[in-house]
Image 1 (tube, rainbow, N blue to C red):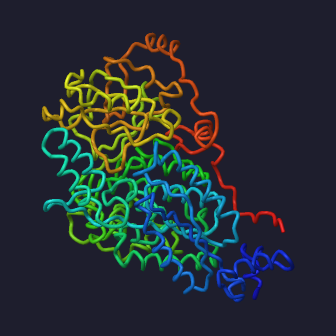
Image 2 (cartoon, rainbow, N blue to C red; image 1 turned 120 degrees about the vertical axis):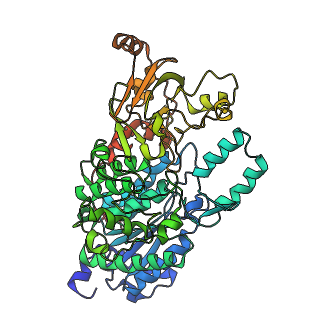
Image 3 (cartoon, rainbow, N blue to C red; image 1 turned 90 degrees about the horizontal axis):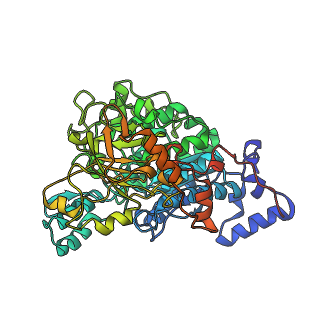
Length: 578
């Protein structure tokens, strides 16, 4: 309540109010030990934390929040921490993706409903980062993302092991008889040996890097390990910076432009990032009114090589990436090739090019130079079209087997992931290395929630015969830590009558990634006959959130958000009920 600028702050509609209303707001806050002086009009900063012991990737965020608070106090703000739900993919059933939109709704409404001038978003697991960004973007108050950082490198018998990626490898070794169950139990503890999210370039690491590429996270902060002291330094710096962003009125709407999304799409290709970034970036773009189509994820990356040699596409892990220069080193390389919009504003108040002015790439193996890349341009995510996916599908080329990128084989169809898992160990299963495994009813509405089930393990009989990969096609997702020749996000999904619902055992499936096609080689008249016979499954949900989800979720090519959540709803101060 000191000067005109301070009294105009949003929080002063609460803490600067006169009479009974102001007394209620201030006095109840003072039961936490705050003195009257903190209500003098200084910026009130919310610290949204998804800390939860049910989300192991986020369990340490309470300590990160303390570092953020120090920074807010240092800069003259008032920090107020509040909890959000945590969508941890490791434990939640049927999938954390089912709850991403719910978390985004919660974050949005909590920010809008409370006396906040700005917010720091603390996330960890892969769905929490996009959910928080989506919610904050819809409110459009100054916001900065602080991700919790990756785990330390896994270590098992003298080799680095990656979370997620080695789960699939160890499972294959177990099925093939190359590893015992006791060895698997021991390896579990070697894989996850510190706080933090996956240390491979899975979806959590990808979305942390994407948040930094968008300009919503401080430079270099995506890669510091969760237990490195510099993770806390970064959090403290974010606390200081959000106060400055409030003063400058630097909102997400100024940062999340079309050019910022183009930067993020290209960076995802350069880091060998997760296919899940397609879903999350598309949904986030819808929140801010930016047109971002599925085709952009192919068109924008044709000239972008893969620069980062990390699992699942390469051999290193996030700890190595951090010490090699982290994302700023990647951005600097891409800027050399004029592959990014360097003039885009970021949460620092400076441009992307300014932020990377002193970036240094250490060595040439983890982060490769632009003129000698880990994988050549055009090996990132490819978007496929065809009569099997008229609204698109995606494949991560860098994690696929080159010899399978052009393939024709007979379909073996399963109506659910569970149906496949029931027979995967059957030595008489009618499949060979040419078979195309089709898993359907795993999309947004069909499962529901679009789980990470597409990279199903190979049949045991093929693993024992030495087969290491085969083509799989699914309307679900794949973990960013996964690998293999897997076509994902087939749209429309089978549950709403997409062509995947019409595939029968033995139908020839033709995959041609160089020409970006996925085709079912079946006569049009026969497909029309099958469509006449197709019937949607009976509705399973009479109420609750899952009913809401299945009623309103959009298809994968639209980001699987709720249609009614598209666009900004702003931060207008809610009506005073006192």
